[in-house]
Image (cartoon, rainbow, N blue to C red; front, side, top):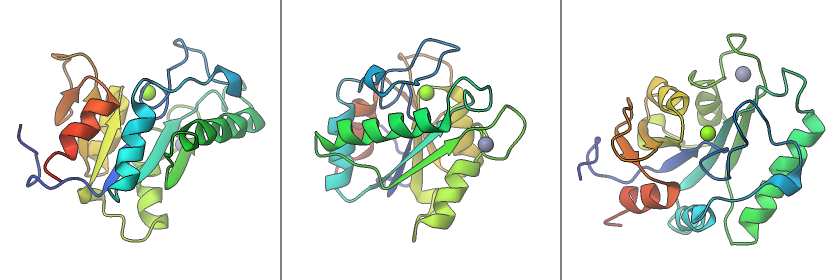
Length: 182
Ligand SMILES: [Mg+2]
Ligand SMILES: [Zn+2]
């Protein structure tokens, strides 16, 4: 299976949150209560594998529910804390966590725009966007990754049409494929 850029594992893994690390809320709804948060099978193990192998892990998430008044900043922070706890309980952590709380077409950071990834590249020393991969379950994640100059993986059933470099079933499989040979 070809890597699109020279076969080297990406140094940085940008991960979407809902539908990639944790179970996504139903369409149109937002996670507001920490106790509703559920990790997807194999997600913590995948993040832990990245941590142990020295890859950076950066979560990048659209949370338009804030702009729509459906999620408060307090709820948003509580869900973030709970996600950190759930991952931490399995020996996994992130190195950066970036949220777009804005409405559509009102900012430079709502995916598929690249602003969250670019902010991480400014904040985190030696983060190189061409040496990063963006993994997410939605085509807006793919768009953000491409706009930032990263490799891209779409999490979806095989054969799903996508502009991504690869389509892979889930985060666990994506991490296995992208780190194989290490
Ligand atoms: Mg998602
Ligand atoms: Zn934004």
